Image 1 (cartoon, one colour):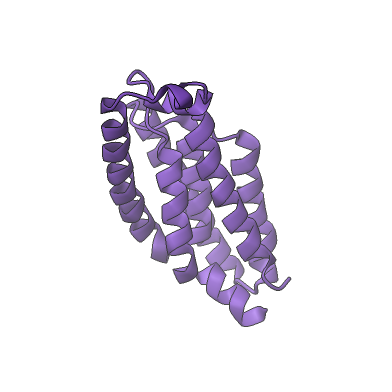
Image 2 (cartoon, one colour):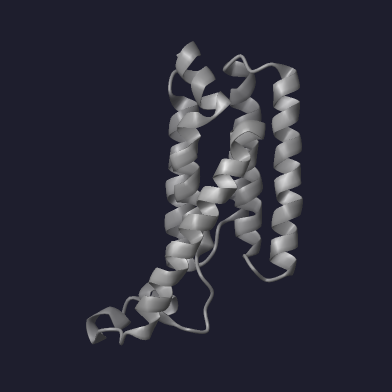
Length: 168
């Protein structure tokens, strides 16, 4: 197994963050695969079944919170599902720090994008569709980028990361 769970989680976060930044979407297949990967890797990392159940509960609770945020139009549906999939991996001990980190990074991201939108977009960059969309004041904020970066920062503190390193 070695470092495969670490590589899978990290690659999924990088892909989710960049995909949301460039398309304002996070694919359902990605969040589903991330959730399934947790359930495949956790037993292989010798995580006790009771701990896996706690992680599942935290993931479900995060999905409910994310759905509430989506209903209030604070985040997109892909963001809500990504939050839940990440919460599976972060578990009881690191989900709150993850949410705090994501909130702080989301605030910084929002300020940066609002600043970007207040400046004229150079003609050379107008042809870049993703930059034009990001520059459009009518568009949302790609919060998935903040969620993904926060996940990468918190991940080394998670139980599954530590178990993978210990088993590896």
